Every structure is written in structure tokens, then in C-alpha cells.
Length: 49
Image 1: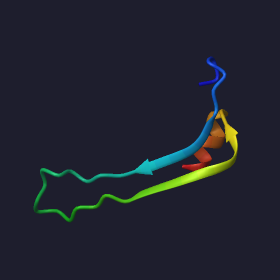
Image 2: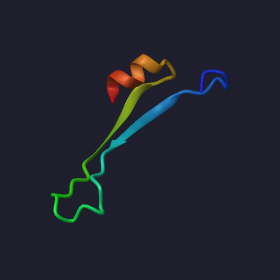
Image 3: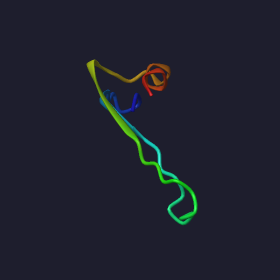
Image 4: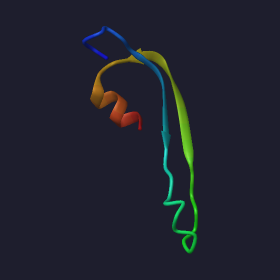
């Protein structure tokens, strides 16, 4: 992103359990967040995640 001079205005994080393990509980939570100011610094994005 930085090489192309781009910035991230929002971030989505999602988790999925193994759909082939039908004997296990299934989870698929997700979270989305918009930034007040776009970011391109990787540690900032990791912190938000």
C-alpha cells in the first residue's frame, strides 16, 4: 500500500471455524471499523485489528 501511496479507510476482521468439523461448534464472528483518518502504517493497522 505504501509503495502505491494508498491508505486504508476501514478494516474488517473475520474468523471462521473449520466447516468440515460438524462435530465442533461453528463460529464466524466479524468486526468492521472505519478510521477517522486513513492509515497506511502497518503497526497502526495491526493495532486496530
